[in-house]
Amino acid sequence: MRLEKCWFCSSTIYPGHGMMYVRNDAKIFRFCRSKCHKNFKMKRNPRKVKWTKIYRKLHGKELPQDTTFELERKRNRPERYDRNVVEDTVKAMKKISETRVEREAQTLANRMRGKKTQQRREDLAELQQGIHLVKAPTALLEEPSLTLPKEKMKVKVSVEQESKAMES
Amino acid sequence: FVQMRTKLNVADNSGAKIVGCIQAKARKIGGSIGDVIVASVKEAASGKKRIKKFEKESTKVKKGDVVRAVIVRARMQKGRRDGSHIRFDENAVVIINKEGEPVGTRVYGPVAAELRAKKFVKILSLADDV
Image 1 (tube, rainbow over the protein chains, first blue to last red):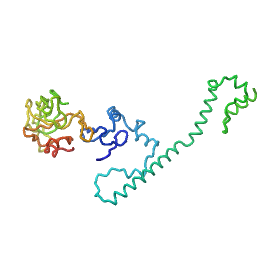
Image 2: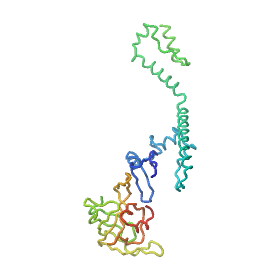
Image 3: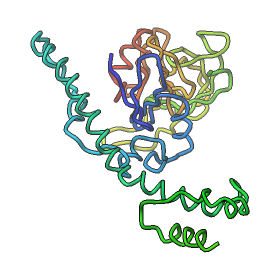
Image 4: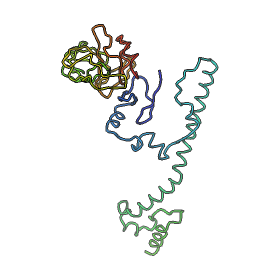
């Protein structure tokens, strides 16, 4: 029994799942589910389809090349059974998957760095533009305490707003 | 399913090119990978061309012959015991005689491993790929 990889989305195909398609040139394509199979029939290139692993690795969304993937390489020659080897392999599998999870989390963190501040900035701009949806403009003027949130960052807009509120 | 009138390619060098199924021997609904069918040869090699330097196109089977054949590739998927399914790009047969021996001497293209269960070992051994 062997766990194969889906040709389209690169997920593992467990026994009992999926379809195997053999082309006339004897090239075998395995698919994990009909979604991938149908995409293949549509002649879509998995490198351009956003939800596949290939696309994500190609566009730097996920850990592209790492030593932790070496363990999962396909080996065609069966190894002679050795109890010690099996024991070591099981231990190594655990350790390697742990490190891979850590490294993937790290790549995700790297990718998302600076996202929080950017999000805050965008939210602030949106709030200022659409404040009439939240509170009536007259209410802002009547009650001086109801000002727009002060932002610690040096944003031009908020400073202007503050001075406007102070003036009125 | 391969039914009456289904046209199938011939995957060996018996001389036929295309056969049309007359009857699916295995099931009423039709044949799939590994089943035997009775077919009529629709298109056959003329026997004048040369495939290789020393090999001429064989004419063991002529147009209009009624032959038995086993389906080695089918477009319709076949389920396997482990739950997976397999399907090929075309419908293809290998022409056999009454005993189940292939009439040709070579088999072209990949064949399904389902043939082993049906005891078509000779075809499997001649094939490029399983």
